[in-house]
Amino acid sequence: MKILMISSTFPYPPTRGGTWNRTFNLLARVAKEYPVTLVAQRSPEVTDDQVEALRQFVDELVLFPRPPEVTYGLVGKLKNVGQFLWDGTPPNVRFLHSQVMQDWIDQAVKSKKFDVITAEHHANEVFIRPEWKNQLTTVIDVHSSVYRTCKNQLETGISSNPWRDRLFLPLLRRYEQQTMQDFSCVVVTTDEDVKQMQEFVPSDKIHLIANGVDLETFPYRNGDPEGHHLVFVGSLDYFVNIDAAIFLGTEILPALQEKYSNATLTLVGAKPCAEVLALAERPGIKVTGSVPSVAEYLHHATVAVMPLRTGFGMKLKTLEALAAGVPLVGSDRALEGIEVDSSNVPLRALRANQVSEYVEAISRLFEDATLRNTLSQNGRALIEQEYTWDYLGKQYTQLITQKFV
Image 1: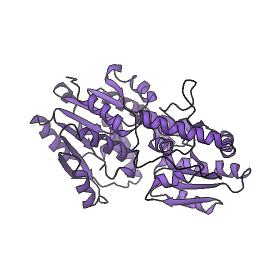
Image 2 (image 1 turned 135 degrees about the vertical axis):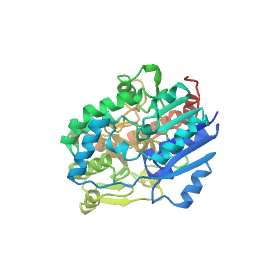
Image 3 (image 1 turned 120 degrees about the vertical axis):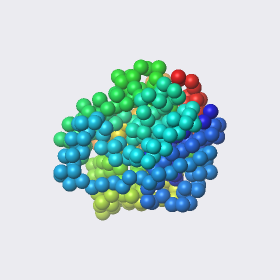
Image 4 (image 1 turned 90 degrees about the vertical axis):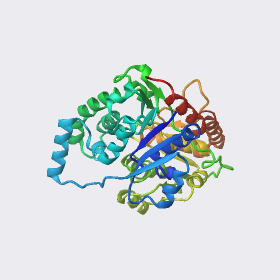
């Protein structure tokens, strides 16, 4: 059985972010069992060494130039909206489409070169033609629903362009509903996305494959550092993490410092934007940028805080904090899809959504070493049992190699 995996994101190194991480780790596990051809786009920052490193994991690596991002003026933005209204394809999906890449994929399907095609992330849906599911298995690994994400941004008031998103919302729902029907199999990461997709396609087409952690990259901590040190981890040029970092630095930390004057916060993540860099001017806040080992910063923290207010799907940074053994306080969004505090499981993290809830939960952990140790051990045990990439990669491999046609 030969498999074609499509990723407009060049998925190496996997430490660059959630899309890179999930795509690479599933790809690497599938490729251990079956011949895999990866078709990807190469952006200018991808080095020759990274290309050669990724090539070692696949049977064949086919690369095409990534279309350049275009900055539009008002007229261009209006044209983009008009085209979305006309053809139903969101601008952030359409701009990644490459005709030369499409031609290569079309020819491969025509020549019956592959038995399975997977689109890794919803942005790659555009390369899959609906009629292909009648002759081979086509899989979409959604990562997270674009419709639910847009809806939540409007509901929580953090949309960067509410007028645009209110216009786009029904179009995104129509697009996602139509697109999901084009595939033999739809893969999502959380129960909430399962429920969303059930509005679009039959339940037997929807399958849950969670996100995972590489336990060698995120070893368990050696001990409890104590103190009053907070950490937040995430790519700091991504709007979901930018909002969380600013919320944590400007609202949660100052309220906590009224009780613990020496409380500190370290923001760990690549490419911090100007708004995040400005947080370093506040008392007790450090912005690191990219670091060699995220796990090291997690191990040195008393508590990890994940105050996400938007973004859907299972969060890798949440799983990585649990794997590292740092006690965690997270929002509903940060804990999506992970059982941490229901009545039938050991307590693995504390939940908070409002500033007062964060202050209360963090204070409990600052004061109670036994509770910190309980969360640390329970969180690590959960990852070892259910969320390693080896375990999840086997699930994904078994799923996509089923006969759907």
